[in-house]
Length: 85
Image (cartoon, rainbow, N blue to C red; front, side):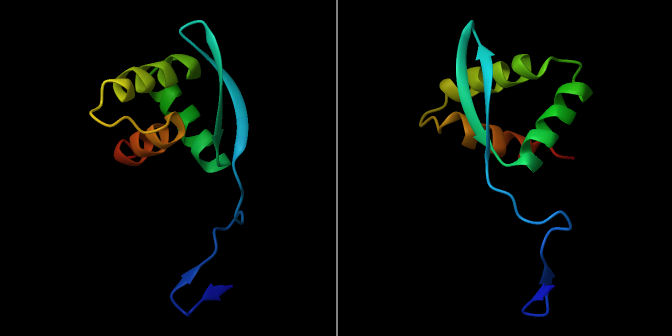
């Protein structure tokens, strides 16, 4: 269904976040992301030939040194958006 005559809902519908546990630097952490972001993150890991946990750890390491570090889920979404081409 088109909202306001301009846009439509995603073909697969809207979905809330899904929580997963990932090990980063030997520690378990829970991350909540929407399924579309999990799929994009998994695809990026394959493209970069990295395990998913290694990609998340790399993004986390970059996030930590930022002037005002966001939470990990926000950093992952931002990284994905910036690297989605």
